[in-house]
Structure formats: structure tokens, C-alpha cells
Length: 354
Ligand SMILES: Cc1cc2nc3c(=O)[nH]c(=O)nc-3n(C[C@H](O)[C@H](O)[C@H](O)COP(=O)(O)OP(=O)(O)OC[C@H]3O[C@@H](n4cnc5c(N)ncnc54)[C@H](O)[C@@H]3O)c2cc1C
Ligand code: FES
Image 1 (cartoon, helix red, strand yellow):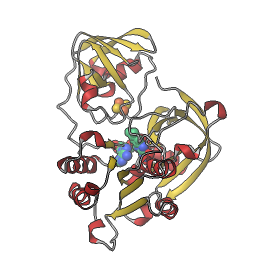
Image 2 (cartoon, helix red, strand yellow):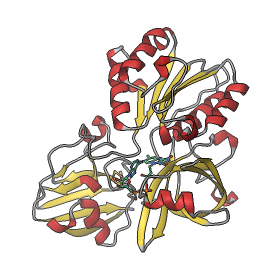
Image 3 (cartoon, rainbow, N blue to C red):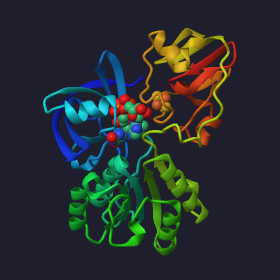
Image 4 (cartoon, rainbow, N blue to C red):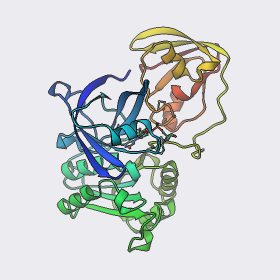
């Protein structure tokens, strides 16, 4: 279960016409609980129009800087991102989970390596946290950033990146790719593609000691760049990615619609307790059946992306229709995304405590 804390908003800063960053005052008593690694995120909980909304946002600040800041880009028609961009102000209280997530870069002050980031749009948030932390805490390491946007005006943290370049001239490089504004070098016109990543690999990364590649943006960019880095000989465990949102066009992780059994008994293990829940067709997912029964388990996106609703099937079977959040080894270990899973046997035991 995610533990939420009521936290005061210290500052809301306009970063671009459609993005704000939000800094929080974390009370001293909560500082330990809010210790985070660069790349991690928090879940925001807010009642909007009578609905319990939960959304996930990555820290854009560096843990070593002592700041707790996220950035929220406004999505057309988006419930939380519109509220954050148009209504939220300093002094307001927000409900925050403790930091979560596996998309992290571990820092080793003795390391002298190269780190490479590919970010598109709001995907810069976890990547800039990594950049800040590497530059501040790994004094012999380098960071190379490739960052795609439509134009300079909508490029989040353009000034912060320029300041970082001024401070760490020799250890930080960045290149913008713009789709709706011409840039001087033709290579950087348009989207970040796998083919361009392969060219950068051949000209640059292949000659460097790269510790890891960090990709954050749309599914198409992540899949294309990952494949090309793999084809260029980079091992899978060096390539890390985080997806913020999967639209209907992202079919790579989608199986056929899952087939549920009409009725099933789900034994739920959560916070050390065992509770039996009746699943019926109309629930639509294991997660919704569990929430309807009043059991407070963790979830956020309900879209198969964030993996907050991850649980382990101990007995029986479920069918998971869509998965953007779990790695193959987690699936092999019996983990499923409960927001995307339906039971296929008359009884299922599932643990949220693993
Ligand atoms: C691990 C993780 C970290 C994230 N970190 C950040 C972050 O640092 N900054 C940030 O701005 N966002 C981040 N997101 C995305 C964020 O959680 C929300 O999905 C996003 O802000 C939209 O929420 P909303 O309530 O405004 O939109 P909703 O009300 O959920 O959606 C409204 C409409 O917009 C579509 N939609 C939803 N999300 C997106 C999107 N991202 N792009 C395009 N269309 C969308 C929906 O399909 C729907 O049609 C992250 C997501 C994940 C899973
Ligand atoms: S709640 Fe995000 S993957 Fe299930």
C-alpha cells in the first residue's frame, strides 16, 4: 500500500507555456521517508470533481541538492496536469506518496564513466535529476544528453541545462532535436530516431566507456532507440527506460483482450492480511475488484504503465492483457499488473506484499 503524506507546496514555477515545476516543503520528520534516488517519482493523490485521482510525477531535482521538485506538463483535457498548471499555488497542500520506481541511476563517486540520456518532452524530468546528480556527485563522470521537443519555447529546463553546461563545461554535453523549428545542424532537425541513435553510437558512444543509457519519452522513441542500441551491440541491462503514458497506437505491449472467468474468488494478501474478494465480470480487472472491496492497495495510472499496482500470483491464474510496466524476469517470477489482469481460474491467490 502507498503511504500518502500531506505536503505543502513551496513554489509553483512556470517553466514553459505548458509546464510548471512544483517544489515541496518536506517537513523534517518526513525527510527520511522522502529520501529518493535520481529518476524516482512520487504518486500525487487529489480529489478532483469527486474522483480520487492518482498520477505519477518524477523528481526533476537532484537528491543531493536537498530539493524536492517535480515538473508537470499540461496534457490536453488532462485532469491533474490542468489543475497543476492552472490552479495550484504556493501554500496549497497535496497528498504525496513516498518516492518509488526502478528507473534510477546509482551514484558511485569513484566512477569515471559516461552516462547517456535520450529524453523527449516531459521525459526530461527524471533525466535532468540524473544529470544534476552525476555532475554533482560523480566528479570524474560525464553525461551526454539528446533531447527532443517541438520548438525552443516548449523545451522544458532549457535554461537549467545551459547553466549546467556553464558549470560543468567539460563533463556535460547536450543537443536539442526540434521538430517544428529549424536548427543549424541538419542531423538535429526532426525527431530522435533509432537510426540517429545508431549513428551517434558509431561516432561517439562506441569509443567511450558508457555505464548506461537512459531513455524517457514516447513508446516509439524508446523502442526504436533501444533496438538500435541493442543492434549496435549494447547489452540489454545497460539500457534503462521509463514510459509516462501509452496511447492506443502503442501496440507493442498489447496482447489480445484478456478473457476473464465470469466469477472467481480472489484471496488478496496485503499488509500481512488475507482477505477474500468476489470477482465478477463487471469489475473489469483484479485491481478494481480489490478496490471495490475496500482494500487499500497501491495504484496510479491504471493504464499498464507505472507498475504501481504490481502483485504476485501465488496460486491460480490471471490473464494480463497489456503490459508496459513489468520486465520479462518479473513476469517469469509470477508478477502481474493487477489493473490489466483478470482471473481465469475459479480461485486465485494474489499478494501485494511481495
Ligand atoms: C512513472 C511515471 C512518471 C511520470 N512523470 C511525469 C513527469 O515527471 N511529468 C509529467 O508531466 N508527466 C509525468 N507522467 C505522466 C503523468 O503521470 C500523467 O499521466 C499526466 O500528467 C496526465 O495526467 P492528467 O490527469 O492530466 O491526464 P488524464 O486525465 O489522465 O488524461 C487526459 C487525456 O490525456 C491522455 N493522456 C494522459 N497522459 C498523457 C500524456 N502523458 N501525454 C499525452 N496524452 C496523455 C489520456 O489518454 C486522456 O485522453 C509520468 C507517468 C509515469 C507513469
Ligand atoms: S496502476 Fe499503473 S500499471 Fe497498474
